[in-house]
Image 1 (tube, rainbow, N blue to C red):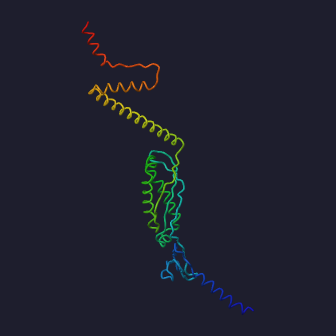
Image 2 (cartoon, one colour):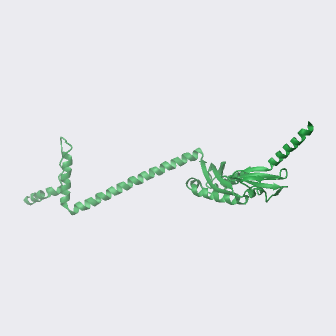
Image 3 (cartoon, helix red, strand yellow):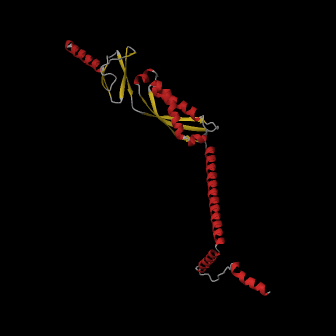
Length: 257
């Protein structure tokens, strides 16, 4: 009985060991293989994707994903150049472009990239003022992406984008910004009102100049005003008489006297 089961157990163990040497890597995965602790080359199937065959107990395969990773950068306490304390968080998009360097050059490329993003975020935002942080968001994102990508390039990691998500201001700073915005809106309102008054005065001056050059136009304007007053159906109507109409009578009266 033991003789019958011994070959079957042996065959089963051989199949299990052989199965341990076959690995299937997906399209977005690559394998970094070590043989006796050294980087192995010439493996059947290469580094993937597809089936990769290694020697069990001698080779070790480490899977690396080539997909883009979206990682949240935790809120960071930042003191801007004008001494305003804010909390800023961001999101960083990166992917592995060299699997071998991502495994060999750094212990944990995900953790290392996260730490690099946090320190760079504090450093870059601390060099600018609060107004720059609020108004120059796109430029800051580009600068963060450039710096972090330069630092992670030796690890085989490519940073494609960095986006600052939220900027949390202290309550007193929010109230100060609200008062500033209200004062700015009031200033613009006064400027627009003054500009309208100036344009109206300019138009009136132009109309006065035209009427002074042609007295008939003044008479026509006077008659138009009378028509507008009569249209109101008032019980009492006051007719303003221009002094030009009375001047001939006044001159005749002076001659008689």
